[in-house]
Image (cartoon, rainbow, N blue to C red; front, side):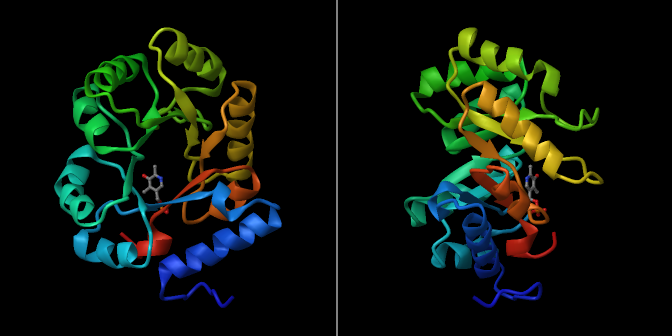
Length: 223
Ligand SMILES: *Cc1c(COP(=O)(O)O)cnc(C)c1O
């Protein structure tokens, strides 16, 4: 399948690369969900992807998603929207109403806010606990050493069903050890879903077990 670095059709190139990574890892293509990260891009840029069959999209801001997506979702049934950016407790109501998955659960106040809204709205988005694998102070997420306790607290104290884990490796690090660490924490906590891998490293993430790759610029172009 022709797919080069200058492939103008970003989605097709990413699809081809995902397929290759799945073959190399002896995994089914269906075991990896492509989350097309559409942050900063408007409906005009998103519409062709929907027309090409893409159905899962990621946004990092609740308000931006609220502006862009209700109309698109009304026009195109079957779209799933994932929140991949930080969530504030005071946006939990809007987030539970709009998103089918939230990849950034990382503190008790968010757990409490989500618990309340999941109950009130009777909606159950898939929840991912974000792990700050590089222990970067400026980055969201739970420290690896605190992950087991936090996951247990999500379940026992807040009654949340956790689907899996998410990580964003530090910019300047090789990503593989961060993906491997996230996969290891997931395994020992009985979690099967792994949100990891972006434009630069999704093939590596698939080799290390990613079930959700969050790909923006390789599909949409530079932001
Ligand atoms: C923007 C973003 C992505 C996509 O990044 P690209 O490098 O453009 O693929 C993935 N995950 C998160 C959390 C993001 O904020």
